[in-house]
Length: 136
Image (cartoon, rainbow, N blue to C red; front, top):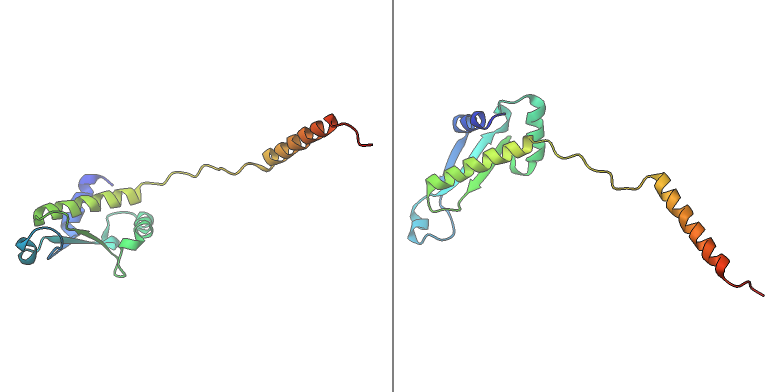
């Protein structure tokens, strides 16, 4: 999915909510609703079903029981800037959820390698034992 398509979909399907924000801002905090909440319906993502399922699984802790991806932004004192932050975060989250993960590199040694190492240890131990003086 291209970023432009994703941006258009977020603007078309996203539901914006605004509320009063905490943190710095003086009296502004008590009067102006700058905290932005973006709600995106995952079921209406313009993607094939298997990709939608991948997004649901990877972002499970951010998706509600109703199937909405919820993103909050309250970093700035401006509603417009918070809205932009939430939008950018949504794009980043969705694109990262769609990016396939790296394949795990096997780190456990093979059985042959383990057996070879043990045989070398036995040979080394035997060699050291052969150097000892004989017991009376």
